[in-house]
Amino acid sequence: MMKTPADQRTICCDSCSLPAVSLDPLSGAHFCASHFNARFEDAVARTITESRMILPGDRVAVALSGGKDSTVLAVLLAKLHPDLRDSGLVAITVDEGIAGYREETVGSACKLCERLGIGHLVVSFGDRFGATLDAMVRESPKRACTICGVLRRTLLQQAAAEWGATKVATGHCLDDESETALMNCLSGAAGRISHAESGPGAGVPRIKPLRAMSEKDITLYALLNDIPIPRAECPYARTSLRAEVRGMMGYLEYRYPGTAAKVVEGYSGIAESLRRHRTPLPARRCTLCGQPSSGEHCQCCTILRMVGQGPEPGAPTKRSGQV
Ligand SMILES: [Zn+2]
Ligand SMILES: [Zn+2]
Image 1 (tube, rainbow, N blue to C red):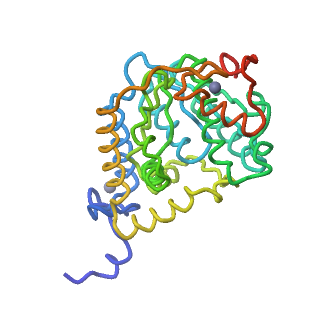
Image 2: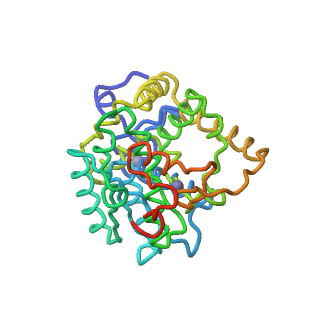
Image 3: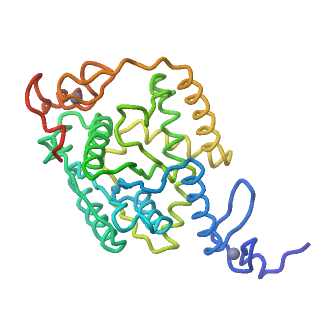
């Protein structure tokens, strides 16, 4: 059938007659703003329910960097789980000490929590580890993402445990998950594939309610719902392997829609299989800080010593109980 000029100007939602704002590249279906929103929220709610991520009585600490993904996550948790709002939901922002970047995102995280009416804790590398990330990596900025990743995870876990969280929710999306899967393969980190994030000694269990959502859809959801997206970009992100893997995955997803989901699905299957056949390591504790560790020193203490901030054996440590 010939299309009229009007048809060519406006593509409509497949479920109603309103203008479409989104195209699902896999099914070819178009969605208007309200059908896109409903579908997006349903998908996140389904991820949470199917994996039993949030159960009655849970206290959830959401890792709120102030970036797009974690901001959308905080908004959705408050919306989908109003029962958590009174005292079961808190946001934790880690200030790594990155000049020209963190100020804006911490500010927007504070405003968001006020708007949502949820508690907000800000914890910093400077207070906890004695130096900002900028100071730690002055000599070798290329190590920034590795150092930051470990220290941020440690600090987030500590703050969440002290608040009494039973779950830590992070804004990792489908793109992040597929990049991590590829990076672990590319760097030969086979051990990490079977790493049990929620096993005994791993701290407060982590949940990733956005893990099935693409970054593109998260961005669109933020735009359609007036959720502020800070423009600041971490100055260290460009120097990482992840940045290159992200470009590669973006190209593959464009050429072959659904690639990211398939990478994650395949990777999860391998990880699950490895976990089932893995012999549990004997329980050990870091000789410096006393936290559970697979070796003599935990990752956090190893990194802190590398950047000249680590405790000496037997020295008092701020690791436990102080944020
Ligand atoms: Zn519609
Ligand atoms: Zn340690």
